[in-house]
Each structure stands twice: as structure tokens, then as C-alpha cells.
Image (cartoon, rainbow, N blue to C red; front, side):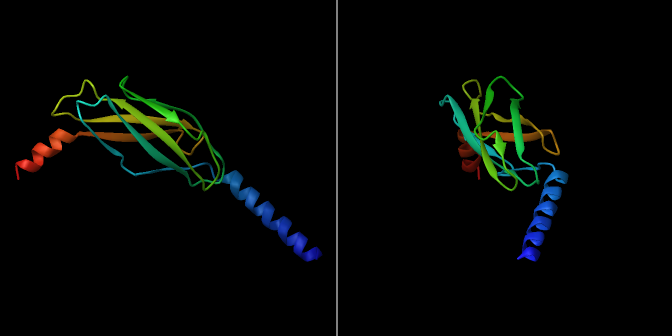
Length: 136
């Protein structure tokens, strides 16, 4: 019984040391987010899954966007090691035109290996896609 207790303590110590050495590491799903919009609609809302592949808890402090037309909601500010959380991106498309093909960049500010993690979100006009398909 003593040997088992010692073994458990050693395993917990090794696990704890591993957790201290592995900073949070962000992976997003979908890997390359794409949102389709229509100029008649007011905007786009897209959820992105954030995976923490590190050994420490990921603490998301804020998410910044590259333009005033976009904002983000941090649904899960604290993500345990090997856990997942959600971000919600909101983009106003009311000023985008028929031929718009654009990108909005979001930056996740956190305690991760890359403390300023970039997420480019490609925006494609649905009408533009229909016109492209009709030309073939």
C-alpha cells in the first residue's frame, strides 16, 4: 500500500512539473474561419472553438478586431489544459458591397505561448459566390 501511495505522489509531482513547463497553446477550429454574408443582412455572427493544447490554464484577457465593424465575445475566458472554449465574432456587413471579398483580423490576447494570437476571418459575399458560379 505504501508503494502505491509513493507511486501516486511521484506521478502527481511529474504531472505538476509538466503543467508548469507547458504554457497554454491556442488552436482554433475551424482552422481558417470563413463567413458568408449578404449586403441585405445587418451582419454576421460566427462561433470559433478555442482549444488549449498546453499544460497550464489558458486565460483570455481580451480579443481585439482590426476594424470598427467587428467585435468579439469571449464566452470562455478560462480554458483548462486540453480543454476547449468559445469565441463569438460579430461583424457588421451593412457597408459592404456586392463585390466585397474582405478579411477581418482578430487578435486573442492571453497568457498563451503566442500572447497575441491572430485569427483571420475571411468574409465572402453570398451574391458574389452566386455570380461566380453562373459564369462557369
